[in-house]
Image (cartoon, rainbow, N blue to C red; front, side):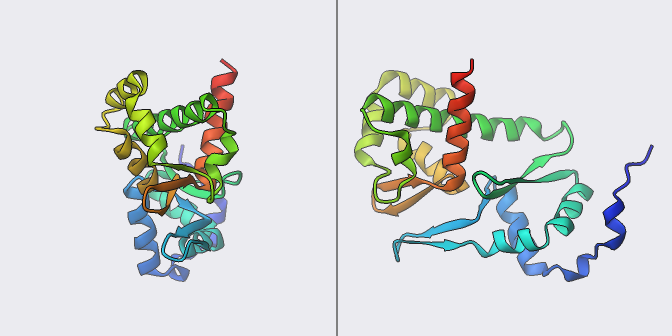
Length: 197
């Protein structure tokens, strides 16, 4: 039986800008998310990500486009970000690996914050966040270093770089970071799942 998409008869890809669409696809294929808000560390301020706005405006067209190539366009309203997932089982291993790495890093960060008497909410506040001192403490902890190695990440600075490169954290200045809305939402869902075990 052929899967039918009733809305597809009213959609036209001619509305989509090829340059913007290619840039969005490239970000997704690099394992990145597209958050509503980005962060400009030179100006020390947040900005609205134009690719997010464009995706939101043409969400039906992009949803159909990605379905046609075996992907699923997903929107997380809590963290206000888009990402793609595989519509088939073929690419699930890579997606699962990215999710496991992200979840593990965020869980360790949250645990570190709790153990040091700070609120997990501070992780997502740009003026608070976390810094090189926190990263050095994570690296000095044998258990956390073992987790890093199990994730096939060379070091804790590389683990934080992994979060930044995928859009789950922002670097505000040299050696200072905070979680994006996507990172915060992901962190909260990981902690909730962990607490419910």
